[in-house]
Length: 467
Image (cartoon, rainbow, N blue to C red; front, side):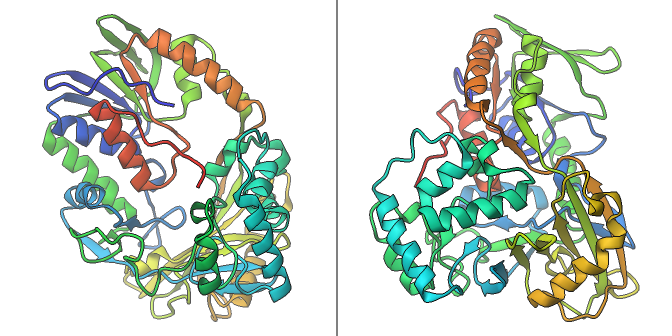
């Protein structure tokens, strides 16, 4: 999806648009390659979704985030930004499906389901292994093709809950921005046998919590598999990133977005809100591609083909001594309000002067839903679901903060793929070899950093491929 004409050259002037994780690592890697870099972010601070909000003396992450030490190079970049001020994390993962809670993975988990159901899923997976995943149009069809009818139907029901839209209305490429790329079809022993079937390894998962480096055996630079910023949660990463980039000599333009963008054979011209203009030899765009098309082409053919999922985010205040049973918990049952719950206040070791910490809970509902209209009224039900899952045994939280978010997940609707390809062809022509962009569908921080490194180095970025 990315246009790269050549690697970044020492002395080149680059503009990076977007100050989220992508933009931060892009600015760092470009500066380390000897480029002059200006990072432009329309918000007043770096980090995007990672920028935590303060409440009750705590810094609230928007969901569950921590860093995955699966690659020495990626971990090096993050640790340099944080100056090694990190905490090890030992995740405790759980998933609820059909009223049963399984532990060890944070994805669709059938290990606690009836034996007959697990046998049927195994047989259907073996049949699906030999089928091509090409040619499917909808997310529902992609899930059925990938996992077979039974597990595919369960994944479709979970996707409907996760995204507040029928999976038949989403493009098949939405698979790669979802938590449904892999499933756990059975207990680990049986799942490992199935992973040995040709074509199934990338579709199935087993728990690695008994051996965190089981799937990252070559990692040597940091001794813990997962880690998290010390201090103020992910706000620590955002603040450290700003200081780190400024220390490298990156120019930060915060609080102003773009109103114009053009490219010619000599470079790019960026018009900022407030009337200021910047010029650079090359530009790296790290945001959604629709707005880029709008600026460069004069129209955004993609925005209407993106489904934006509304979400109510609950932050519950708890005694710091009452740690939840799980670090990260999915509830895929359609009848539950809770979609995900996490405990960043606890694995981040945050505690206010009153000896309190927090958990975060995500509830996906349409904007016409009663929970969206009055989220505080639904808080007791949300809490009771957490108790029923085993996430916590506290009768009630000390306090609750609710936030309605009109846009959380963004997923492509039917027709998006065709429109995207046409837009990219036009962007390549209009960019004159001066504009590159990242793939907004990459969700994992390690994948994002690998892609950005490829863009800076001039090579082809990693592609999302079916396993």
